[in-house]
Length: 264
Length: 362
Ligand SMILES: Nc1ncnc2c1ncn2[C@@H]1O[C@H](COP(=O)(O)OP(=O)(O)OP(=O)(O)O)[C@@H](O)[C@H]1O
Ligand SMILES: [Mg+2]
Image 1 (tube, chains in turn red, blue):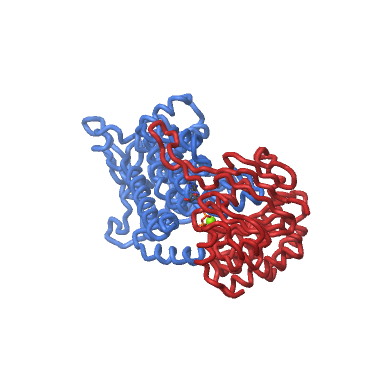
Image 2 (cartoon, each protein chain N blue to C red; image 1 turned 120 degrees about the horizontal axis):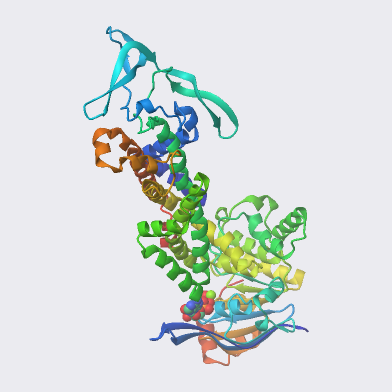
């Protein structure tokens, strides 16, 4: 199978303390030499405690944040070397769903405005009608009726907002979707609905996922591979079942022990 | 989570309870409407002069005639004699009544460049001269000139604030969004402008431009100067908001949807500062009005025969004039009322909408 994404020795340090001459004296090593690869159509789980650098890693992979060093090879092309202008065409193929549904939709836009924004950026030639059709289709794909297109984000629940986020990403027909704790702020019953939606969409569209989570139950349920992250480093990785059955690293074991057993 | 629409309605309700703000709103509305309809409301054209009536005091409007009968409002024609210092002493000629006529005809004018007419809201027949606020040195009706002057004085505030906001929110947005060196550079520049006392800045900027300009050029020069002084304050606040907005996830999302940086600033950052901008506009407009007045007062702004509140007041620069003809201070009263009304209204807006609360919460 084709490798859709390969990350090599990726690093992102945040300067924290300013020295006497305004030079950074200390760094938070949010991502500290991470390597992994992801096959097309598969799901890679990324687990680790809060603050271990999962979101930073996700954002760096999408070049929403610039990395300090390392390579991100997406579909055989090193995208760390691309300029901001060149990266635009790649952006369409990799999208992200954020952790906090209350913060990831601009409250001043209607659902139509939110979901159509990417389309308008990437395909200026498309007619208004075509854009509307695509947006409506994307909304129906995530289980929301097209009547909601003129509503504003504040009129929706967390789960519905997360569906809007998914529609916003999917309308661009991406190949890689990074899910940054997409359900951790939702009720358990809603979590299952959204997870099932994501699994269905993956099958239908042959999507590749990077799935970031706290919740090991969900990871076990949907991920083919899993990476365990601690302090910016990947301490253990492998096939999900293998890692869950016989964790090699002590940190993985503590994670597994402290995880509540969630029925799904 | 509260809806933005809901909080808008709540803000309006709060604003309505703010008595002074509501009152100020109506005062401002009346002022702006009369500026719009200045040629209709003022009984004379701003250039109409009657040298015989130099520094005539305000006309006495009477409703009881010399025989002691109640009558519709009228005035008497006035004549003058010189006293021993060759000052004019005006006396009423009580032989004939000149009633104040409403919806009457008078000086011709172009209304809003649309059509020509001679319709006036009120006036009196010749040879009587109706001067609600008295006249100036050349015998021009001060009331008419104050009303015409409000067109310049009141609009300069709006136009100036609008331009300052365009610049301020753009610079502030860029500064807060990009941060780093861009931010330090832009903000140091803004601070330099802010620390120079605005009067000196006003005068030195004015000296860049030629002295003899047409009135239209002068208007734009004043607007440019005033907005140059005004944008840094706005930029600093917008920058603060942009720093906090720039970290929201929808900004990152916009990035991954292929938006450019400027597009994000324009679509996802600046619109969120609108509520602040509106409040701050209403609070800073008085500064623009005062700036125009200061320039015109010093003879560096709007020039005779055009009227603005500032250049009308320049007549009142000599104490002797104020002693003998106190009514020439009336334009100052208008400046005072407008500035107060904008301040009170702005305070009310700020209390009601509290635009910064959105940022304090997060
Ligand atoms: N813009 C930033 N500037 C400085 N430090 C940052 C910045 N963003 C993140 N960090 C730091 O980097 C580390 C990793 O943060 P990150 O958000 O990636 O963690 P996370 O694994 O996603 O945590 P969570 O599970 O809580 O979402 C944290 O210590 C955080 O404080
Ligand atoms: Mg995170």
